Image 1 (cartoon, rainbow, N blue to C red):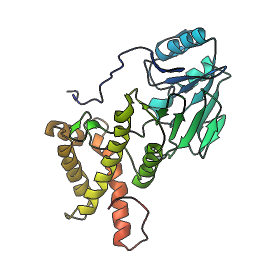
Image 2 (tube, rainbow, N blue to C red):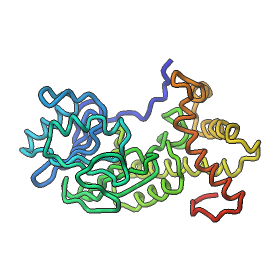
Image 3 (cartoon, helix red, strand yellow):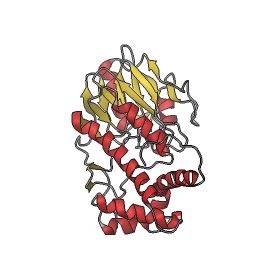
Image 4 (cartoon, one colour):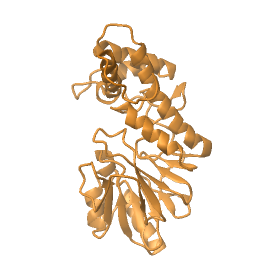
Length: 304
């Protein structure tokens, strides 16, 4: 049986939508930005694209924007290298062979412009590329901030798992992460930006106060994992602590017990979704706990 908790409500509906002057979000996860003489696309995604000769879905929508604006795709921006964000990169390269790719310097993608620090890009109406490690285990997360329209594109970094703390829309109480300290620093840096439109890497769009609340809820979820790891008084065993902490925070966030059981159950991949996507965050904090027990130096992580 499929879980009823599958993610936040898609308030935009299907199809291509305008998010502001010179900004569109496709029927997939791609955001298109209009520059003075070009278009830039953020995250090719993995939705059906067809092919350059017979485009479908987001690629067909991109072609429509090219016709309507009289400008061609010249830049492809990548928030991180997870397959669901870059599977269509080869198709998009074939469709726009002169387009240049922007990606993180530490990631596995071949890029025309590799970003290792904050850099201003004269494309898409003016965009700042900001390294924001935390979500991808490769450490190759980039967020893109466009001052015009106060638009923030954080990829998968912003994952609140619910509109409020006690009402989750996903069967996990915290986002995927491995090392909490860089994740929290990245969220803190993004929170200082003047943005009012948030478009995540999974076509989730929020505005004004709700957009900022999503950053705060994401940070709160990560910190809560650390608080419970620090508070743990059971057997000094990650295999016991991890599921117990998951159950506790799932209850806090209103996730039904049936969803918790499904998340913890081993599936056809030979492991559970919890082991693949939730346990890495507990493991990161558990390693810090062990360092402290040995008397190692403080690692600079906010929280307990």
